[in-house]
Structures are given as structure tokens and as C-alpha cells.
Length: 68
Image 1 (cartoon, rainbow, N blue to C red):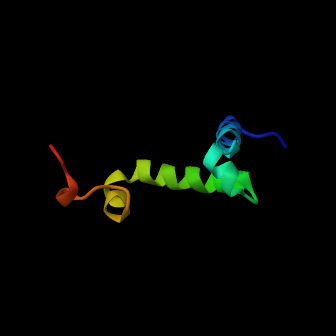
Image 2 (cartoon, rainbow, N blue to C red; image 1 turned 120 degrees about the vertical axis):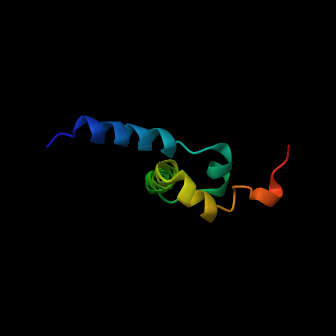
């Protein structure tokens, strides 16, 4: 059974992200593809619900941290 174009695009996206960054390579990864899929899924969630995930993110500065 062949992949749909959407599945193929997602597979290519995961394959590209599975190429470890230097710091990831230094730390090691037991399963770069699973790691890539998880990272991309989390990223997609943040994009789809930016206002909802903004409140949950430890990387998003709050109003107290805003600078002019």
C-alpha cells in the first residue's frame, strides 16, 4: 500500500527533522525518527493553538518579561 501525498510529505518532514542537530548528536538519541515526530507534533500543536499553548509555554515571555 503506497502513501498518500500527505503521508509522504509528513514522512519527508520527519526524515528531515530526524537529522540530528550537533547538540542532539552529542547528547545521543535512541530513536531520532520518534524524537522528530514528537518535536514536530508539539510544534504543530503550538502553531494550531498559539493562544492556548502560549499560556503553557515556559519559553514564551509573559507580560512582566516584555521589553520595549
